[in-house]
Image (cartoon, rainbow, N blue to C red):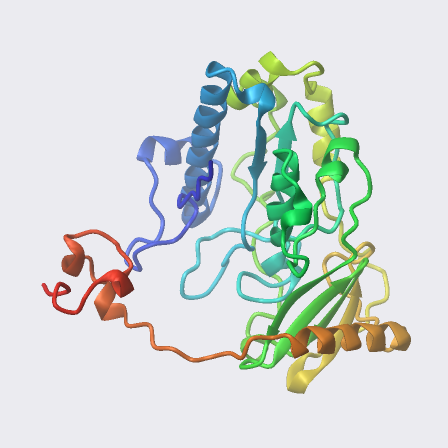
Length: 342
């Protein structure tokens, strides 16, 4: 089962964010009104997840389920479709190759895992879920095409082994002339996005509130999802462990007094970052590791050779008008010209 939640997305330009007023009122401590509404929207996702997990437990299938909660990209903190989300303390936002655009937090839970309650910083790509979930369902991964990009990481999740993934291509954009690749704990970026418009740090830390807010471990422990999971768990996570895991999951930038080497991606510039030591991409190491840079550039060239040529197509937005499809959102390419009329 897959649920693609729309709750945290911006919508109509006149009122991009909406949530029930009674939910918004729960976040009066948030100073910014946009952030306050966004918090309410995310809160409704919490309610939705709780309802799903509770239903799985009531149906007696939670103990044999694998629950994955993830996002496809960072928040569009500013710009045309801003939603007031924050990628703090990471650089960039949705649509960029900076960590703020492509590094998404996620969690996965299952009673099938032998070692639970841990934080992983292993490299995982969205394409890994196909072979991984096939393996989880006792499917034969060897039947998959050998050329797929995904890697089976099921044993890593169950037994806490290191993943076999060592690199991932983030993108090669021949139109905008930028690309990025991660190899082990290093990331190489070539060229800027939108002429460097979003090569900056965006979003609030969440600490500047009208009144101090303490992380409420009791609320977490008493949430519908936690209560449902605890009913089928042999070793429920304690409130103390919540605090410990939360601390381990916090990303920490370089020390304020640490030396930094500037990154300039204009005119096809190249930057290299050690994501383990520098997740906030503040210290450009491109001039200090030339052999690694050459290795990563060669790998990019290999990927480039198999790239499907980019084609510019018009959006045909007028053909998607719901009035042409009995007032429903539909694929307009499935509609014969004669039937697509208001």
